[in-house]
Amino acid sequence: MSTLQISLAVIGALLLALIVAYNAWTTHRNTPRKALPPEGDRKAEPAQRHEPALDDDIPAVPASAVHGLDHGPDPAIHGVDIDDALDLPAPPPLAHDRWPVLDPLIDAIAPLVPEQSVPGEAALAALPPTRRAGSKPFAIEGFNEATQQWETPAPGQRYRAFQAGVQLANRLGALNEIEFSEFVVKAQAFADAINAAPEFPEMLQEVARARELDQFASEHDAQLAFLLRARHAAWSPGYVQQNAARLGFVPGAIPGRLVLPSDGPGRMPVLVLAFDTQAALSDDPEQSAIRELSLSLDVAQVDRAEQPFARLRDVAAVLCKAMDGLLCDQNGQPLPAMAMDPIAADLEQLYDQLDGRDLSAGSPQARRLFS
Image (tube, rainbow, N blue to C red; front, side, top):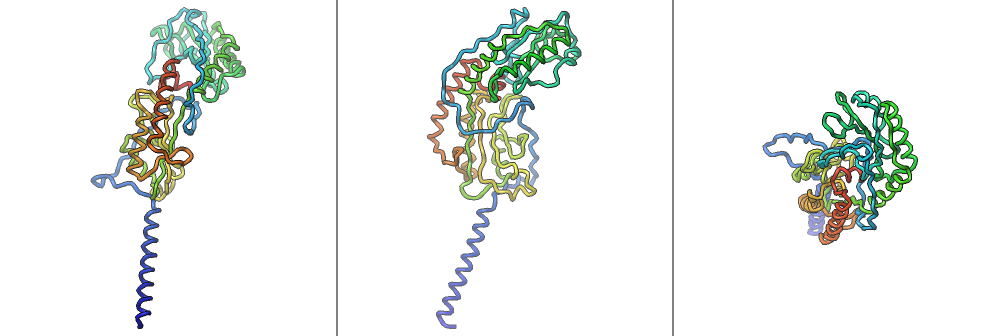
């Protein structure tokens, strides 16, 4: 062979090797990162915890872009004092980990006074089949003779007074005249069944209160959502779950959804980490390629004391470093660390305004209103 032929053969061999190496590198780069095997070659036990739920009837609200941080006027809402009508004590203050009794701050309430005390079984039998008036939660509570507390009617108890209520506003809007009329019909039917005399509030006044409350809620609602995008190699579901688990996340009720539980029992999760549900349900999840995650915080649902935004920033920083990711806004634009400081300052003002309205973030009333 001539020198030229030998040189061409060597060059061809080098090109072939380079092509093979490039294809191998490309394949490796595009292969989703997988979770590392547990220490000691033991199988990791699947997490059994699930995110807490308040009410199955409450529609889920998708995480949206950063919004709701503009502060508008603070209209006053005038409460309705039902205690004078019933001559009964007001409901006691409640811990944040319990679903609240009806509250004049966010409910239109009608006292129902029966001619005599009513057994819990009779009250339960008279309850309407649904717990909604239109899109608003509807509830009936009884004043327990033994405990001297307002509660949902229960068998084996006796009640000397009742109150029916419908929520004035939620994220679906303000209570309207049609929904108020439905509330009256349901409460009247219950009152007739237990031989009670209802005292309904004036509809126009309650609808006006509902609109004021809805206006306040609209101006002070904030749901924050950020994207974590893979810089190079994609992630497998197992890889995402393994890294998130190190930070305290557990599987949520929906595939592809991980939640950071609150420190208190029964409270809403502090943060939600979500990825493509189809990837989580894949026949071979380890081959599913995930290129972005959503990290979100529903501000009004989480107690301020949990420092949820600070934890969100910490979680985002750790995950980006560990998984070679990039923090972006909802439009996919990279977010520098300094961009988070103004959001934190706005949130502190928002918390103060919610506190001033007795609708502190994470409180039962706020969780109901912002749902």
